[in-house]
Length: 124
Image 1 (cartoon, rainbow, N blue to C red):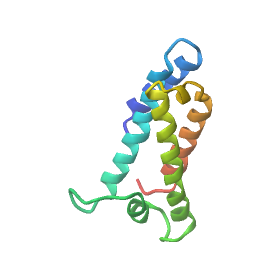
Image 2: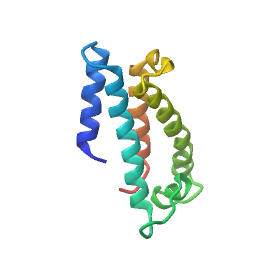
Image 3: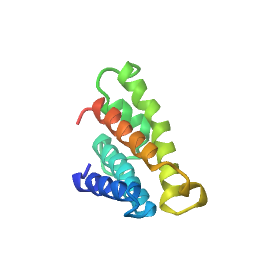
């Protein structure tokens, strides 16, 4: 994952919760981190260019331990969290009514937790 994307997201988040920046910019930056890191994982998991990749297939190839083990099961479960974060951040990024009332601190915490969990149980 690109360090600059994460730093930009952190800066936009900090500005948004300080009422200096806009929530929309923070939502876009955070969603970019989420989507780019997933893309990077999928690229790393592919056996050949153009291979159709799924979260489950990526989990089978990149997780520490064996398929069906604790790490693998946790990585599979993290797809649900990824989808939830992506939906919530899309609402914020689009300035939708629901996204305006979302607690950015909660989303930031969940995003960092998700990244820490996933990146901690895969082979990099």
